[in-house]
Length: 311
Picture 1 (cartoon, rainbow, N blue to C red):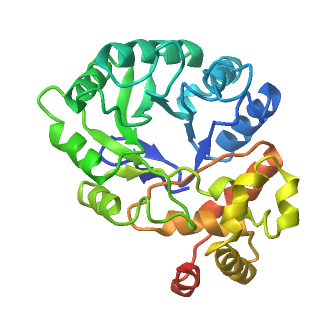
Picture 2 (picture 1 turned 180 degrees about the horizontal axis):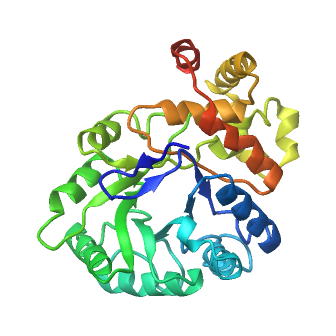
């Protein structure tokens, strides 16, 4: 499998990144272990998580996903085969949030402990922090790089001006964001295409988009009002059935039929083929779901396919 450069970080990833948001949540510990094993054993390497996963679940406090991953590393010894991505800055409660230097350092230590590892390969600022100068944030990230606890850093959810400001502030003892993690998929294109895409291409940043399957909508699971009752996420899918949604699904169906593929595989392959995209992130709650999406990495879309999907 051909690996792709994650910007100028020196890190390389397979063309698909496994989303760890479900670990310890909709995928219990045993299922998470099975998914991680199947992913790594299939030749893929990058897994994305965050300290805040899955604090939104009643009874959870954050750190559940990192804890499961740490237990998997300890049990199966595959840390050296895994490109580990995690994030800092989201609200962990009790005032633990943001990108001030002192908090970043403390949060990194907490993540390392949960993950049962001595370093994080790619550490992302989860959201911009308007209350903290970007210079302070980047200086803290550089301290972590200098100490060997982090190999490279990046930003998630930064808009164009914010990304430009972060890049301009790098150097002179401050780390450089080498990776952007934006919200981007075949249905939601405006948040990345345009200014951010141009910056990433110009600066040779790695790009690993999340919500690659639009929370499951691009799998084709939700096509009618009746389908919305199939999942707790049905309510948030209703708006996607309006506007471009049905047309996008029809285009996915057409391209999938040409290749004997599934809509999910085509949606991920489309992202992999987009200029400046390094690797999309996709989650799975079972090995069966994982095995459906992995073939996307070997699916090559033609110019006609890309044109069909450009709705």
